[in-house]
Length: 431
Ligand code: PLP
Image (cartoon, rainbow, N blue to C red; front, top):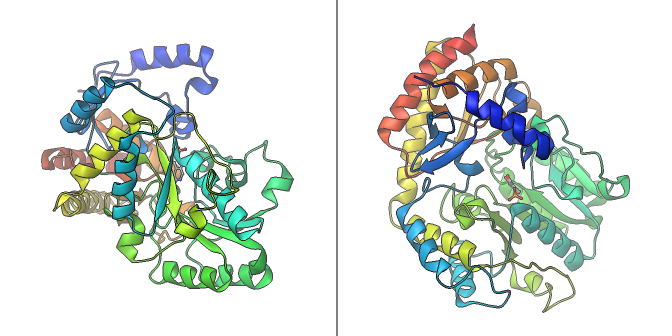
């Protein structure tokens, strides 16, 4: 029995007195589902708990990082040990070498890697590097992809920007936006046309190889391969933004799963295991342009700090064990299949996309392959479904345009409970 939202509502009112919109990142405000967010007190395994005493099975996982679930004992123990040595030195540590070794081994296209503090920093730095290396200014991004909130990437962006209706943010100068070309996802012909017109001036194409930020949208068969050939043909760098997909859709990320070698890769989320982290890396000759080796400047006071490295490495160690991704795959399939069946039984038209441990249920009968098809979703139905799920103890992202995430901590019982709840929630959505 849900205990209501009274204390959360009170805290949200108070938060709004001091914090813009009451939150430190927009989608947390529940604006698109028309209500107040729940305030969380703690997490454990697959569950989070709110201030009113409600328990939720968590499919948000801090928006992706917590693929092991909350408070994994090994991660907690490693962090406790790390606190004995200190939190940050601003000087090199052996931990950073170990982390770089693990990342470059798992993602071989990353011959050299630089740690940063967020996904935004990673993509921003990778693009500066691509521009510095190619001595070209233009970049291409895809409609509905979100790559963090750097000015030149906040154009037709997904995630919170799409949810809040500000895919093109105020404050981005036209002179900056003018160098970003936006292409439709999964459409190689449209991209080829762009390259025929201005390919010689394009420094890089940045892509979510599996999109998570307009909901989960997989690449069409052959799309990533064609993208790889096209960019190579024009001397344009291909950047895989694997902030979400890295160590989630497989240990080698989407590039491992689809067998594509990008020039540069950005990581975040899982590699920090819940602490603030990002990374960018790639071909040695390109990465050698980064300061202090080369003329492309990039820096960070807390980059590579011991706590973040420790959480990240412990996560990667656990994820490297045999069978882990098979387990994530089968749990995710069980949930997605159960949800699809529940939707069908309730007579609600839904389109399901899933790649490994990320998935989305779009409230539309159209196949969702890009931004245009994602936005055919009936967000009113999604909203009704979302609140009914929350009331029954399953916490999904409060927006149609976000992916759901499975963790190793989710049990079959959790998944069955969620499917049972969904049977009712889809009926609510159908009304
Ligand atoms: N790139 C992708 C694909 C993301 O999903 C995100 C965040 O959701 C980012 C970049 C930005 O990462 P951060 O929020 O850590 O700055």
